[in-house]
Structure formats: C-alpha cells, structure tokens
Amino acid sequence: MSTTGTEPEPGTEEPARKGKFTFPSALTVLAIVTVAVWLLAFLIPSGQYDRNDSGAPVQGTYHRVDSGQSFVDRLNDLFLSPVNGLYGIQDEKTSLVAPDNVGSLYGSAGVFLFVLAIGAFITVVFATGALDRGIGRLAHRLRDRGALLIAGVMVVFSVLGTVEGFAEETLGFYGLIVPLMLALGYDRMTAVGAIILGAGIGVLCSTVNPFATGVASSAADISLGDGIVLRFAMWIVLTAVTVAYVIRYAKRVQRNPDRSLSGFLPGDRDHEQTSSEASEVPELTALHKAVLIATALVFTFMIFSVVPWSSALTGEADAEPYGFELGWSFPELAALFLCAAVLIGLVARMGEQKLSSTIIQGAADFVSPALVILLARGVTTIMNNSKITDTVLHSIEGLVKGTSSSLFAIIVFIVNLPLAFLIPSTSGHATLAMPILAPLADFAGVSRSVVVTAWQSASGWMNLWVPTTAVTIGGVALAKVGYDKYLRFVWPLLAVLFLLICGFVALGAAVT
Image (cartoon, one colour):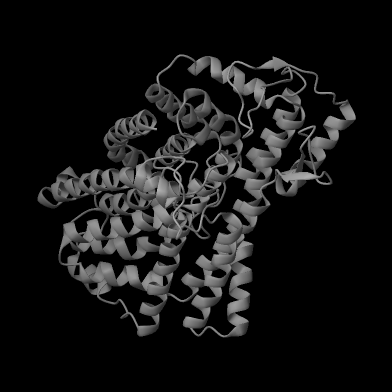
C-alpha cells in the first residue's frame, strides 16, 4: 500500500554506505515534527474561532485566548501525544484532549483498527497466490499484443491503486513484466512506466483507497464516499492519458530502438529467451478464480456501503438518504475486512492454523502505517490542547481570503506538494494536514471533499517521481534503469497531469 513511502521492500534496498545520507522513515519524520510543533506552541499565540452548531469554525470570529497550560501540562501533552493520537477523548466543555476525559473520541482508534484489518485481508489474498497469478496470466495472454498488454497491465494496477492503494506490491512484478516488454521489442523504461505509472495514477486518483482517501476523509470529518463522483471522473481521464503516454513511448521505441531513453543491456534484444521465460506462467485454478471473484465482491460491497447514493445521484449534499444506503464508516469497514479475510481463507482452504497466522502476520505488517496515523494525530492533539490550531488556520485563511472557490482548490493542491515531499506517508500527511485544511473549505464555501481530492492529488503526483518512495526508487533499481533517465521520461507527463489536476479540483470547487 502507498502508506509509508520510505520503507523499501525487502531485498530492494542497497547496502548502506558509510557516510551516505538516508532519508528518515515516516515514523522518524513525525517524531521530529511532534517535538518541533510542541516547541513552536510556546511561540505561536493561542486563539480560537467561534463554532457553529456542527462544530465548524465561523469565519471572521478568530480571537486570542489564554491556553491556560503550565509547562508541566505541555510536557504531559508531549508525553501522551501518541496515546491521545490513538484514543484521546475530547472534553465537550474545555475541548481539551486526554485519555481519561469524558466526551467524544478525538483519537484515530477507528482508522488504526481499520488499517490493521485491511492489512490482514490483503495479506490473506496475497497468500493464496491468486492475485499474483491472475496478473501473470493477463500478461501472458496479451504477450502477442503489445499495446493491449501495456494497457491491460496499467489498468489493472490503476484499479488496484484507486481502491486499495496498490503500490509497494508492484515491486514483485518486475521479474515478469520486464522480460515481457523486452520480448515485444520495447525497452526497460516501458516496463517501468507501465508499473510505476499504472499503480501510481490509481493512487493519485484514489476513489476509496483507505490509506489515502479513507484516512483523509476521517481527518476531515466527512464520509469516505463524499466526492467520489469527481474522483472517479479524474481516475477515468488521468488513467487514459497516462496509458496513452506510455503506449506512445513504447511504440516509438519499437519502431526505432535508438530512441530508447533507458537503452538496452546485454541480452535485452534476445527475444527468444525472454519469450520462453514469459511462457512459464501457471494456469489459474478454480480456487484462484474463486478467490479473485470474492476479493472483487468485497471491494465492490465496500464502495456500495460508503457511497452517499442520494447525494451522488441528486447532486444535493443534504439529500435524504435512500432506504438502501448503509452509510458505513471505519468501524463497520474494519469488521467487514476482518470477516472477508476469514472468508477468503475458507475459500482458499488455508486451514485454521495457516489462516490465523496469516491474519496475525498481515496485521503486524501494517502496524507501521497504523503507527504513522496515530503519531500524526498526536501532533494535532498538541496543537489542540495548546490552542494554536485555530491560529494556524487563521494565518492560512489570510492567504486564501478573497480568492474564488476554484483558485482556492488549486492553492490547496499546490500547498500540499512540498508537504508531500517532507512527509511521503500518505496516511501521516493526511492525518496531520487535514484538520487544518478541511475547515478552509468551509470558509471558501466549497465541499470538504474537494480539499481531500486536492490533497490526495498532490500526494499522488509527488509520489510518481520523488526519490523518497520505495515504489519509485526500488522500481527503477529492479528494472536496472537510471533514476535520472526515469525523470527525463516522466516529466512531460507530470506537467500534463499537473494541469489536469488543477482543472479537475477547480471544477469540483466551482460546482459544490
């Protein structure tokens, strides 16, 4: 999943050389941010907005207040920030967050458990071998139709990216896709583009990706299904543009190999050898087909359960929900994926011991992104208790005040670009930034879902090329393509995507 961004897949990281700088992990970055924000809270004046009945800040009502915190209180907030980030309770009268308060849940316990549950589910699916073999069979069937093969692989990766953040998992497919592309007369860059850009554009245009859209929607206090129509339209258009871009490059190389940006290594032009390797793909068994169908049904049901159908079909945000709407959120989705993990295990006849150990292993593998979420939420508890959140919001309000709704959406997208570089974890970035950015949508008179879309677009756009992501740097290393050559290949597409994103978020803000 595209969650931490800085933790490379096992076996893809080169041995660290003495004295070589290594970008810190998302957990380390957020630990540094936690201490930095705690220190800044001594310098930033406390203040707050008046709130309306729904709890949203009222524009123009910001005023300075006394935080009422002693140094010991602030030190205690720093100490308890991870705990508050998980299950801190916000007092209804004082608005302070603490583990033993009486009030509403401020921490991210629901999202934390959801991430562990979906980690267990995805790990069980991969343990069956059905997904790997399914993609392998698709590539094998289309091996004699180059353009269709590229489009098929990219669309599958994009679908997986938009619904469940499929990103790091692509590192396991280079051994299959690279030889296939070479056998068809393409180069290694074609394989890199198909894999990185295929999955990456799906994550960029996440529709219900729990690690991007889900976490951001939770932090923005909106439904996962809010804004799904705009995000789906973006996914269709941007995926089509990206697929066309890679196919255009591939055909150019096929016609004239000298125009390859990556060049060819010894043996790359040996078509017979790679074709033979490509033919060694096992058939899909009935069991694998059943697992793939069950997995597709689970994600289809997830989408159905979270979409506010009445609002999506009528265009009215306050439309009366239809009787068939479920309106599910993270507690129900966590239960869904836990049950689905068991269901997949039963369908695959894994056995009780293997299924139990796989579920536990899957949850354990996803502890890292889950911890990122609670650490980032812990930062917001420090800001909340020291009463500087509204002060920061007020300062940003001054930057966007008077702008049109469309320009506001574009500014949100651009502001998030450097944040996405500093915090490559999509989950951490969302949890940290959204409590500040989402209320700006209220001031601008646009839906908070537009801010979520602008944020995830910035995160996804940066993660298509920044060297701090294992998906990019690990991918070019596995394909034996220079990172500088990859940048040369991808920058025209990045420019086109930048303009398209600005157009979509501006349109989304204008029509809300």
